[in-house]
Length: 259
Length: 380
Figure 1 (cartoon, each protein chain N blue to C red):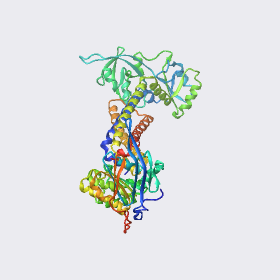
Figure 2 (cartoon, one colour; figure 1 turned 90 degrees about the horizontal axis):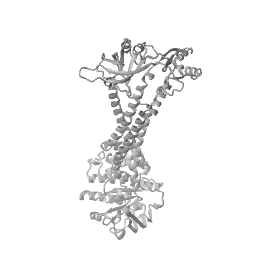
Figure 3 (cartoon, chains in turn yellow, green; figure 1 turned 45 degrees about the horizontal axis):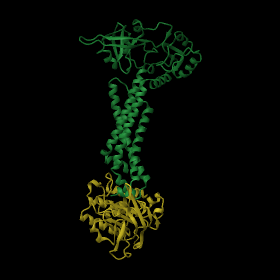
């Protein structure tokens, strides 16, 4: 992983290119004496610059799919090729490094440390990426500005609303300039207005930053912002529908962050 | 400020339980160590605080407690044959039945006691270094005795000047000592003359352990070796430090103090491990989702482990600080009650190290959950 993510920023040039491909993903879990097949030979791909929604009822395997794609959960069968690397053939240390360099995550529950301010939430991860304190702080400020929290950087999670917390989490994910952005039910805990803000931020990450945004949701309000909607049920893809046309390289080469 | 320290400070309520558990198990261990060592030190206080450089015991003695039957009286004179020996005196004492002179309506107290004689010269080899002039003057009077503050109740003494009797001979309490408690049997300090008046001074051919002062205390080891070289198996000379150590060792090994201390230290640490590990585990589990999200963002397990080790370390530091305060308070209280505590440095270091180990290991144990569980389950 020689490429530093911040040198290779917002590849508008990579728009429309395949970011991640999965073939024949299978995953089963043991519950009691029986196995439940959560993923039954799923093929999947996502493009840079696309917001790809993975929709389905609970228990359909969509979160498991995202975990397998992002290197969090090893599939029993199948391969994941992400950023031109065979993800699951890497040793676990390299998978961590891959995620550190390329992946952003946003969760339903925000998962922010109660003790840290918004700014510290973001810089903590950046420091692990190897940025020095000043640089991490600068990048974090840009990211927090981007999500509209430039004025609340010193607040702790307890002083922020749900929507603001999720925006801090998004800033934390975006500050590291991910090429792959995974979101697991990012709007489920939010009201309509905040949900829309979050959705727009995800869309902007894809359109302006060229990230492949893979978003698991059963929130139908988000569907209208998607470029592609994939329905999954009982561990199988039922339906894969492109809503917008293939993304074309945009004219303005404007990065989301770190401009 | 690091993530670990920020978390500990911000969520101090969560970690307080672990800190208190650490502090109290530290207190439990150290207070017991302090108390038993203090009591033990009191046993041998007359040795530790004597100005003697060398002590001479029977040839097969292993410590003052099992010192055999003393040694022939002629050894006393033999000591002076060494040119560096300045003064020789025997540790004399006896025992008897103590009974107080009860105030009207109160029951008479009867108690077996032991007597211990000192020479009432401030430069005598049997005169403990922390005895002051007042004690000396008080003991100069025939039939005057000094007892330790902790023995007053047991001996039925209310105040200075009270009257009591030893084996039917009337004595007067002329001084209350501090720092010479004896938890087995009360010790009554008298002058050598009073001991003689009480009929307890040794007159036979054998005498108790000898206290020897030499010209240059720094030469104690050399003189001891020279004395032992010519002992012809009639006696064995010890330096004071050597004997004190042997006494401590004998006390821990042979008396119930050692067993009690060992058991209570074990108990204290067990409680510490149990409560601390559970509370610290709970505190870290409360943040497990946040740790899982860092893990998802690519922070390695090793880095997370470092955070948790640091968290355990700071918890341990806070716990040890609280231990120090509690132990300080307890030691002060004990001192006020006439029981001096003593804290051997190796025991303190060992306890502190163990408490720290508990804190860090409990944190790491909690992190094991993160490793074992599916990240997808935690990240909801």
